[in-house]
Length: 373
Image (cartoon, rainbow, N blue to C red; front, side):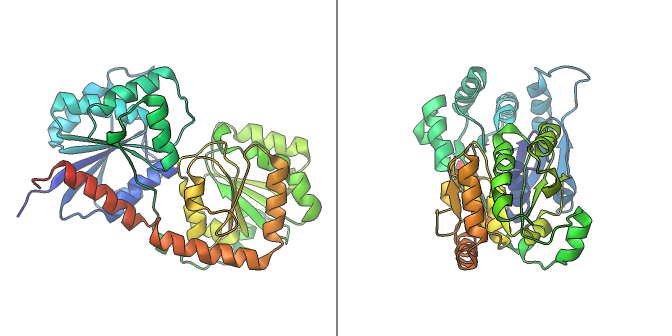
């Protein structure tokens, strides 16, 4: 019997987010007969830890420095990698790539694989230089969309031979549920009886939620009984709540805070709206598609890889509240269009954006990197 490949996923945390969900899905679907998996969190743990530990996979937190940045975190990473005799590290975004790769070099780990999920390019020069340098030690650098890969080549000058696209995937079965919509509305404090639109995301500038709020007066003019639900946490939360009040739409907007019941929320929504300014390939769009919730999103990053405008969803210009409002009203007013979006999206999830397919693609990378196993 061949010895299992010791694989470590390295991330900032396992908090609620798309990157973290990719790690959870890899842990859930990977062949455990071939791989002994561990997850290392560099900054903190997070809400998804129980889901990983329920799979029998150990989650570790890097020993934390009491104050300030830990410029020698890679030494701690190296110690853990050496103790666990790790064969492959799979890092996610910049700090894990840097500290993970330096730790791998010091502890003689055989293989480094890195995934870049989402950020705005050009990034800070020191981050891009660090990633360019670390890419020389990586077996492959994965982008979650073609757009992400092109940016890594253009801005970080990472060798095209190192770059590969592996699109995100989700577990469709999680979204095959039925809910009591009236009960869920009461739970969220939704009093209106009209359509419900919403999103679940980090409340950051990147997500462009301010433009959705700015679109609300035009949307409510056509659909006055509509409610917008915003699920998530982030540094923009107070600012967005204040903006909703100033614009005069506060009574039609519900801020729920972070939620672990997004499948249920997606079943409640009549439309999922993602007004991002930039993206990789957001998991939330794929989740909505799997939950039979029509999608309106901005035409940024890899969104076009999941959504074909007019076929299985709608794409609009970013930072354009009026265009967003018009598309939201259009889709909600056309049941046939909504039904077509739902049917086409389900087919695409099953054939292209399934978590098992995604994991198999990563497994092939792992296996190709250590062919003797």
